[in-house]
Image (cartoon, rainbow, N blue to C red; front, side, top):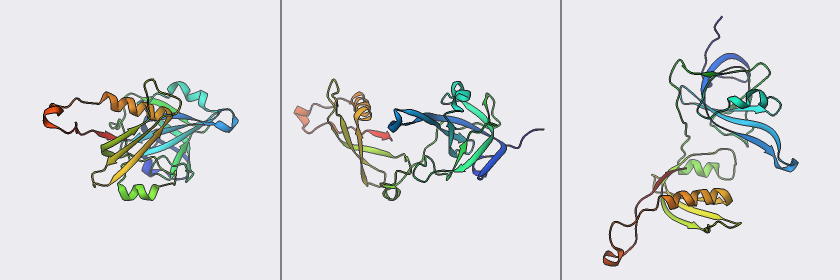
Length: 218
């Protein structure tokens, strides 16, 4: 007997025996730094055919069963899982629910889904929404903006302490500051350096400095 197919928006708290088809966007391990990096679980971000993004979690004792299947971009059919409420201080999506893999969870790779699945998902926030999220540590928002200025302490080669601060203008003309430290700062610094463009005119003749616009998605 074929199982019922549902979307993420149909899920409710409790055990789910229906099937959802989704693409694995990305995943990472959650470790307890206070216990020497002990593995606690793996977090997954999944997107369904409607573009709805949902968080999933696999406990450390069940992770070996699925480890080799976890490849970003792969499509899966998932059934026999639990649906639980997200911790409010650790929400990765707009949904207040998450999927928890259980002992009955079926996680099968899909080569031919019923409908095409998105290859990426974003949650864009405007200035007022960013203010509402300040200091809550509850969301990981995306923004699109124009880089107005960059302050960087990254050297070549990078030293022990590195920091990059980027001033970004949103489409509303509001400005926000993006601050990164350590390895993230070095990575962004190198990305911005690779995007550097020589001026199209001779500054000795015209004056001023290169003002080529750079637009980035964060």
